[in-house]
Length: 137
Image (cartoon, rainbow, N blue to C red):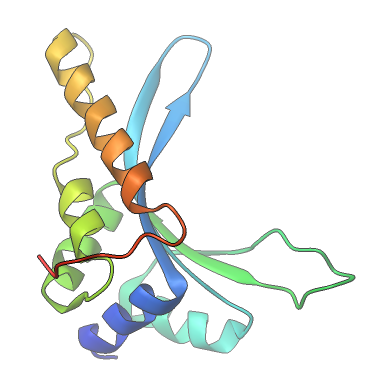
C-alpha cells in the first residue's frame, strides 16, 4: 500500500493531534494519528502495512453504521506522520506542529512544559472543524 494513498486517506478520514494524558501523580503529552471508516476491511489492509490498533469508535446505533478507528500513538504515530508529511495536503500544517512534540521527561524545565502546552493549543486551533488551511506548508 502506497504512502501517498494513506496520506489521502488521512487527509479525508483521519486526524492528527496531541493527546494529553493525566494520572493522579503525573501528566504528559503524546502524538496521535487515527483514521476512521465503516469498512473494517480497508482498515485491516492499512494495518497490515503500517501497524496500529483497531477499535470500534463511539457511535449512535440507532442513527449510524458502526465506525472503526485505526490508531497510532507516541513514537509509532510520530514515525508515520513524518513519512506522510510530504504527501499530506490538508493536514500538513498540523502534522508539522505535532512533530515538534518531544517526550516529556521527569525534571523538564517549566519552559519545556510551556512549549508543549503551546503545541497542544496550536493543534487544537488547527483541528477546529471548518478551519481552512490557506497554505500547504
